[in-house]
Length: 203
Image 1 (cartoon, rainbow, N blue to C red):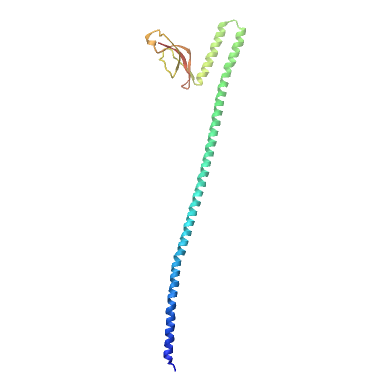
Image 2: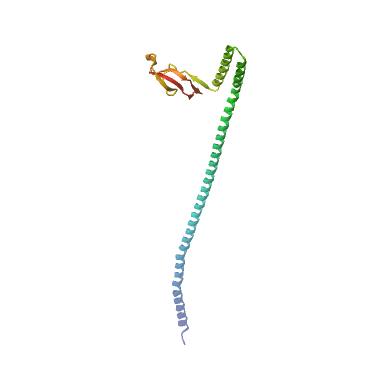
């Protein structure tokens, strides 16, 4: 008969041997799982990266839309402002002309009355007096609007004020290079020369 103790010890050794053989397999499985784990982590990191890039792109697009909308609004506002100011300038010039014409109408009436009375009157002195009155009334109106004439005779020739039409021998040494005669008056409107004085210069 086989000894029971030996048999049991043999079985125990076989079980141990099987355990020892299975142990490396389990360890290998564990190591494979450890190796696989970082890959999953890498995948998740890539996903996060992709999401971040998408977010950045979405933010950039949103910012572009906002800036583009702001630009279009500003352009529209500026265009409206430009049109409004142009319209206001045009209306202002029309109004200014209208005001001047309204002020000139009484003088036109005076001229018409003077012409009518001159056809019937025999007294030339009265006609001349009427012409002077109309002239003075007209001149005062223009002065009220900012128009003024300036003297040129005896003054040094100035290209900002005068337009030389010819030269003539000066009557004296002092008048050389100066204006000795004026053929057409010069005028300023609110300080700005609107018509040069046509003059003769002494030489």
